[in-house]
Length: 200
Length: 200
Image (cartoon, rainbow over all chains, first blue to last red; front, side, top):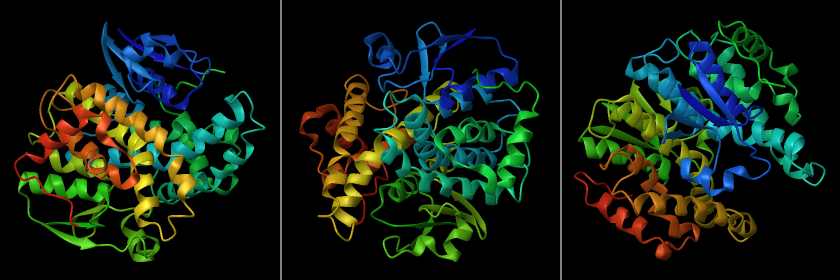
């Protein structure tokens, strides 16, 4: 049985839970106190020298880091990741979009406003993330106005990865009212078999 | 024949050239004036609504964006991307590391110092990228002190992706003197068959 070393309220970690639940795969969850500094301790760095959650422990001592790499590993050979080269590459295109053009704005604004010990001191930094976040939401909106899911008309790990922080974008101060196609897609994701809500 | 829409001096674009040259695949290159704003024009946004180079035109009208997704697409089924699920995931782990923990520091510092129209005004922003960039180089150093290449002991697109901005890190003000394993690896990459230097 795989073990997830993660923080339940982290979108990057929640992606992994969503895929495991959608696939009906048993797993153990080891909650990591990232805010308290656990990812900088030697025991954690031995699992991931880059000091970030989530880490998937595939078997004792065999570790895989980077949330979207973990998604590809778990979804390989399932309906959540298409088999042909071009469709897989299109899924990857959205996974890299998520990590470069979406997460550094939408997830970071949420972190600064909701999890940082001194959110007032971080307000101007959080504000600086808004235009990039809205830009990413605009790219998503134009895609989802034309297609029900990001790749090939069906639910895949591209949707899981983008859902994770989009559905809690309000925590970062983002208003989804002007993104109706994004809101309809959030609902479609929530209707998927095995959908797992983020723990409160 | 595929066509690359890119900027020759962009590391993200150069990765694509490196893989095409290593595989001996013919390609056309369409140089895009990103500094002059060409990626914000309608014709470019029709290829990539996210407005970033590189874009791979697989056949007329069929586009793929995100440098590392393009690398996976081109390398699929070749020696540059292992076939088994776990090894592929390990390559992806490094590709996501590159885009999240390396490029936003090392490539952005280089852009601000070398390509920005007013680098003096950007100095403090460029300085703010140094510690993250050195942190990424430290993660690379510890890996490369133990292994000749990032995954499975052989050259893969993980090496291509990380090479692209590391070999020009000096442009961003990074000093590689204290990273001997990284410097030895840069040399190993340069010795690969079909190695393509970045155009001057």
